[in-house]
Length: 215
Image (cartoon, rainbow, N blue to C red; front, side, top):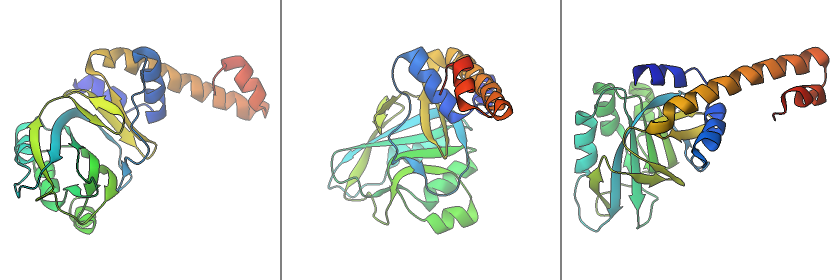
């Protein structure tokens, strides 16, 4: 896994998205509202998943709290929510402190994040979220399970899938096809560098497209 993570950290997120399209036969990139809300830091690591569902109970997000302490360092915490009104924060300053203490590399949320000033000032921890909200999940959502397949922004995420994200967006790479996807993404990066160089040298976009057949 370490070598895979290092490899995916070297390639463009757009190249990973293209490679997932070709290798897996389906899109791996999340809907565009999922974007960095704290900083522009890249994330790359295995997914650790949490599912939340609508409720009127005032209960803490226990599955998420336990997961942050229990999963391997270097994980990306992925939280999905179903039902209810999603304009609430499923992540904040205390969960960020726990993630930093346990060596995790980021969070991807199908809901909101809050405590932005605190997270930026004290942790500079990358959080990719659907929106920003001061609202709490208490009385609105509860965690129902962890380390199960979840759907976030149009993409199914399994525990252990590789999550890669930067300012372009977030891509999920199925764990079983990660090596093949990485190989193709690296090839795409190399071809694009060569193509861009040719376009500059020849002062012609058409010549670059004609030789490499890629846009």
